[in-house]
Amino acid sequence: MAIDDEPERTEQIADWFDPRLYEVIRAHSGEEGLEIARSLRPDIILLDIQLPGLDGYAVARALRQNPALDAIPIVAVTSYAMPGDREKALEAGCTGYLERPIDPDTFVD
Figure 1 (tube, helix red, strand yellow):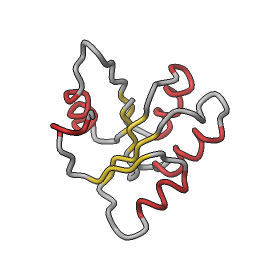
Figure 2 (tube, rainbow, N blue to C red; figure 1 turned 90 degrees about the vertical axis):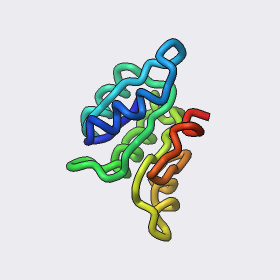
Figure 3 (tube, rainbow, N blue to C red; figure 1 turned 45 degrees about the horizontal axis):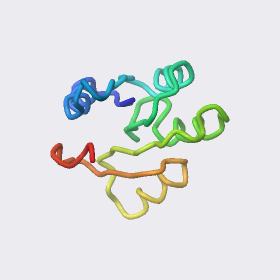
Figure 4 (cartoon, rainbow, N blue to C red; figure 1 turned 90 degrees about the horizontal axis):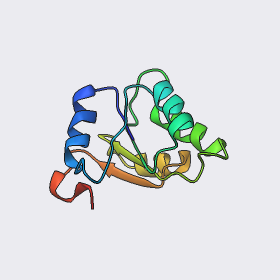
């Protein structure tokens, strides 16, 4: 699942995955992402941190507090690249952290 408030970014992420092998579910807000995660239990969540309303940190914390969802890997995909940003994402519950811009040739790996 890709959670990003910019629809073109979720489409871009989906385009990087072979549709014969992966189904990319898209959410465009933190609230929508949590709702979809609760109902579909995706295999992995690619999470923008800078979301309006419920930001990525809050989404990660909420996912980790739900026993049915707490084992899903969460990768922060963000333009936040200042010292401490990676640590803040990991402390919130993300299991990985990728800074934008992202190389589409190596992203899926």
